[in-house]
Image 1 (cartoon, helix red, strand yellow):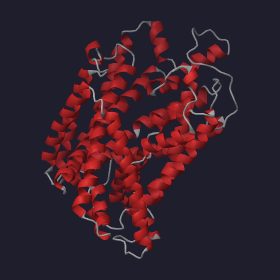
Image 2 (image 1 turned 180 degrees about the vertical axis):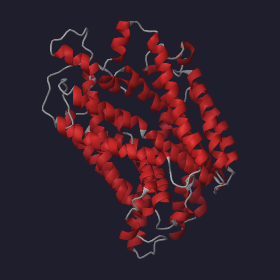
Image 3 (image 1 turned 60 degrees about the vertical axis):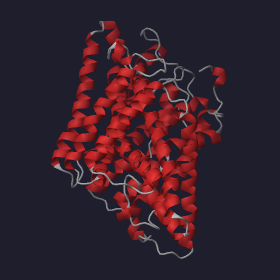
Image 4 (image 1 turned 90 degrees about the vertical axis):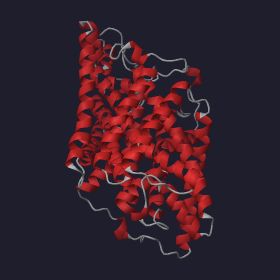
Length: 500
């Protein structure tokens, strides 16, 4: 992007982008089913201790790579080198594979509400089979280009935001008006039970508060620079945390926690609201179903194409074959997209073997998605820790506090994420077969394959190319900055300002 086009995003624009990237009403439903209204304070704490610091970490990596439109691969390569950059970018892609398995059944459920007015319940196996055909259709459409995707998702996102605020206002009015909530709202209900199961569910909370990497890349584009960015991120983080907390607090005003479903919970709470206020429930079900179905289907189309395109075009050429990464006329790597489809098939079918209902199936799928989603931020945090430990002298115009403050903050986050990852990978009450062959086996197979692919690629490089590929770019930049011979400087090294 040209320098003249920088600093064009206003504070309100950044606030809106942050909200769109992070907040989802479905996350309120998921965590309420697991924790009840105890998820309310946990959401607020997670936003403060994770989302805001992680945004600032990404902002520092963007500042470090300010002459490139940096992505995950470039950020991690800055501090850990090419191997770990590839592994991190790969984990972002394969986390998306698990995300599909949790998204597809929701699209089916909301389609049922949209067209029938109620949730037609399938068996887990039938749900998985329909999901596979739906994903094949989505892959075909995404490969062919979806011109209406942007306007469609923009409208439905606005409608979902309107529905969220409407629910908060009306549910709050009902409580103030004297309604007896379906589940009591008191301090006891809001106090989490701190055990292994709770630690596993924290992965769901952190996943809900994720999205920093899609927002922090605009640190160089915000009017007012990095200082304005920090202020907006803190304000937006607190706003999102409060909205998640208030929504979680009011989610059981009309519907019992035990009656909510992962697939159609959004429609259920609005059905309860409409019944209380005397509105036609079938009409409400269809309206919320149409909005939710359109939003979910638009999200499915977007996530079918975007991550596979970003991953296979960002990594170095030579790791995968030319045919795999070749783009069609719509800019999508067609073969890679279909490879992605065939990988999702077993991920969708295996959990059905140990699931007695769609609710059990969704619990397994969401838990595995949340567990896997901990890995990419964890790798980025480790890269940041190494940056502040070894290469903190590299000049950049933004830092998250002093060296000691940065190390302390990211160390706490690493500890929390490590515990949450293991707790969600080995959840209480789960089938040992599911844990071994799906939770652990899936991660081992995917990460092992990534390590093997990079080793093969590394062996094709000569000694000089391998050195530059494996060497952290921050080290090369630091050597160049301090006058040591290290070839071309890898990073821009502007005058370093004081830490914020």
